[in-house]
Image (cartoon, rainbow, N blue to C red; front, side, top):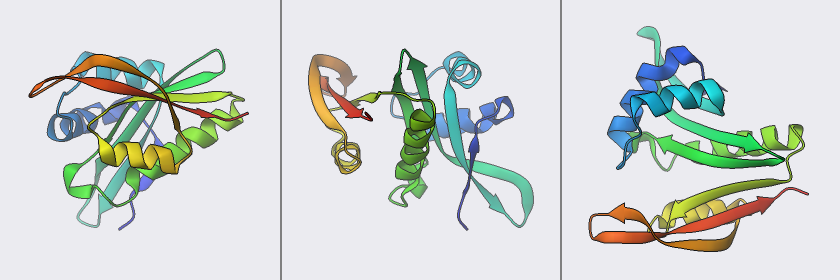
Length: 153
């Protein structure tokens, strides 16, 4: 069944926290998730089953917005649901939202080792505009953050 795309609501916090714990190698705090839902733009993809009205959040995207720019804060997809186009669907919704709000640019940063995400971002038109050396901690030490932008105008 195709998940339902909708704006995130505060009642989603427990589902997003569960997704974050299971699918994020460097999970956000519960406080940060709550602040993001309250103060940023975000969307979820929620799967529903015939057995229950209570769906499962299989993907979440949150972005900040200031001065005509919007920055991707986090996109999460359930490990069991990856490679189904959910991240791309959320990114397209974010892009459409930015266009409707007359933003000039979308920005993000991604671990240099996250080749799948980098391929997706480039497919969507993002370009690498810089790097932050030794920005992220990983199992073997540090790695760079690739800074990427998509110019809308």
